[in-house]
Length: 329
Ligand code: SF4
Image 1 (cartoon, rainbow, N blue to C red):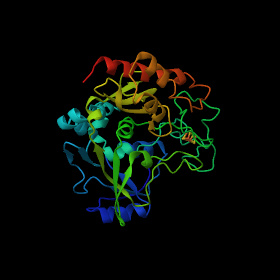
Image 2 (image 1 turned 120 degrees about the horizontal axis):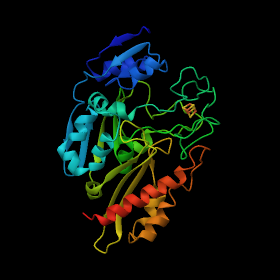
Image 3 (image 1 turned 60 degrees about the vertical axis):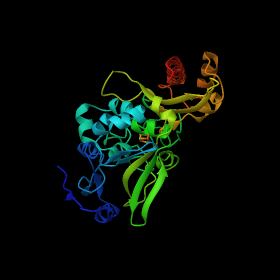
Image 4 (image 1 turned 90 degrees about the vertical axis):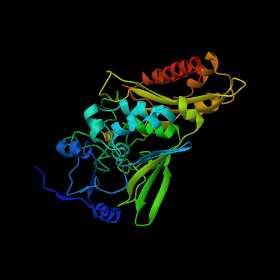
């Protein structure tokens, strides 16, 4: 048993003050309570954000979706307008976790989920820079099949575990936050921090700053987007590799817009910009797609147990884009 105080603030100002004082945020509880039971999170004060007003709306216009941080994963996955405007978001959500968890977990909490690195989640392991800064990294030299190849540092090679954020990075979503200084908008890409020398700092949030929602631009390319997840079993499993992809062709048959982001292989949701750049303006021939897909892992730094992803990721990109070319809008 672990004693902690519990507060359920009624507004952002009170919530921000409680978090700035060291409280841990509680949304759906599927992350914090899990880690507390493992002894990885040791909250002294829990700040329940679920009664904050105005954070549970979904608004979809022709050009933008706005999603409150307290919206449940299952509700967003089933939202008809979102499914039409950006199907990759619903597909990513439905490929995540289990129905029970999706009914509880919030979108804000999903963004803020912690890594599934087994060494991080085992409180008996002393060496984890993400959990105990400066203690080392037990994964380096350990079992690394699920660890990252992209965006790694000598201090941490933990993989970003989420699916939703991969789709969000592909389509240039923006995170809304609140702090006593006012509202802040930052791209999802900038929201997730590379581990570098400070892997314990995972998100670009100041103490007491609260994620209040998401804004997702709804470009035409989003309407045919998809999320494809490769994993060891068909449900309730994290990605071995995943891909959020959107592609639109011009009237000349060349690729006019292309969005690609990878999950399961990087320390943050990873935009595959080199592949995008190689294909935009080109005809999507099998040869062009294969050549561009091979660029995806050019910067990879594999570990002994995850080298298979050097071939898995290009194959995933190649197969997905080939399928999309064969199924025009
Ligand atoms: Fe900790 Fe990162 Fe190393 Fe895992 S990979 S043990 S999270 S420092």
